Image (tube, rainbow, N blue to C red; front, side, top):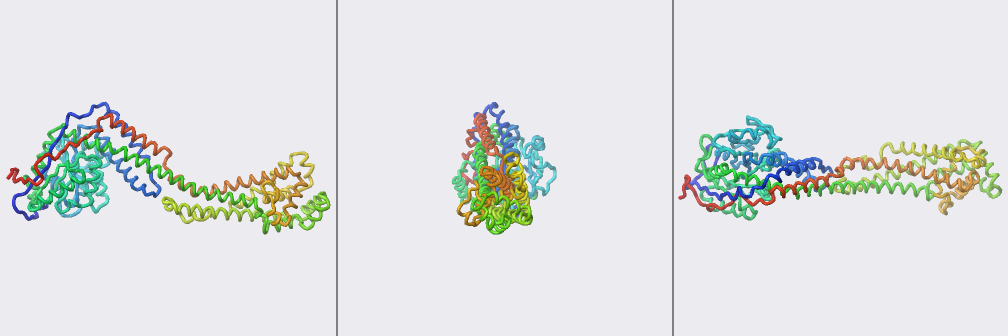
Length: 621
């Protein structure tokens, strides 16, 4: 077979063969009771599928997203409208490889030039649907394939459906000429797959030169898995190769479990001036479709087999989607855990820094020694604690500058610690995400470091904490006995001593490390505070000040972690998505079993003459 009148080499009479037949149609039709609930179950499934998202770059994400789109299309385009009208005309989608002659075959079957055919590829840019004028109302309403805009004119927009009526096509049957399944245009390939999923019967067209191509066989395998009703046309077969090619294709079909699909072999031949194949070439196929159109029970059986196969596949397909959603949730949890672990470690580092005396080193220690007058303290401690109080009070009143310097040193030391732990936590969180399959896609370079304004926020934190310590000292002074001990001492100076106590240890019991670090300074600080407040008051003040500081640090580090957690929060699927998918699929499966779509034996069989039996002008030689 060629197009536009181009000659083809012929030898002998054209060979036409078919394995055809219809089997049991009317006896196994299910009752209407189960059908009444199936559309509702499918509508619920459609809603659940619409909520499924796979934003994380996991290996299962892209296939799951494609599956969601495919299922949504199939539900909208075919399952729901077809279940609503089981008596609607049978839709035959004509699909196949580039240049297989689909459009010419459709034109020949309906005896009119309704679909463009030519040598330029792709020829079919927008799908063409041909039906009998009596059936046009069903297809124009748009219930089937609702996403395609109906038009009466051919065009290049793949999202339009060109509707054509052909009186030569019997009522009850419609052909849809789909784009090439292996088109070089992505949109055409996607549309071809969508249309095939909306077919009651898929008529696959291939040629003697291309019947073994990989892409069509992938689709044929998918059709078999879905249980779709399938018929094949092997086109443009040279007369001398009919036996060999047809037999080999039949063997391939048998290997794929498709040996029950009718196979029609069309010879390589001329086309007439209208672009149609000779009637003798297409007669067996045309007769087969005519018998199918005339048999309402057979059409119903075809519809129910395809519906049954598609419905049976929903439950396992949706289960895979639910599993992919579970993977998304697990990935979000895993990445969140890595972030939280990094910032918990940062918080522990701050706690440890308040225990091990490291904050008493360097500038803080020097400023504390200046502030308290270390050399005099040791002498007065040996003499009398009362004289120490007098010395401290004098130091407070005469030397305001050391107090400011000590406060600034405490602030600087704490800010340095906070900046360090925040930077380390950000680095660990970044590294953890980078090593995760889904984490790298969510990262930006800025996340590898603490936030740009963290130093300013850390400074505010420390200053607010220092003010809080002073308020704490004032509050503790509400006790009259406490006031009796501390009335002579400045609150600011007392607050600084409490801050030093926080740096010493949790319970303000100096460790050997602290004594070594401070060269006795911590002990001196403890003695001063105990002299001022009493032992229990010292412990209470230090504990409260420490807890307040750690609470503020927790807030700061949580804010830093939010830079990461906000990204996973946006990516996290809704909590009930996987459960909703599974429940909706189970409702559909239960409705399917009740509706009678559970048992769908093949309705088209191969009980016809051998595939290589030649036919000349409709007569056996």
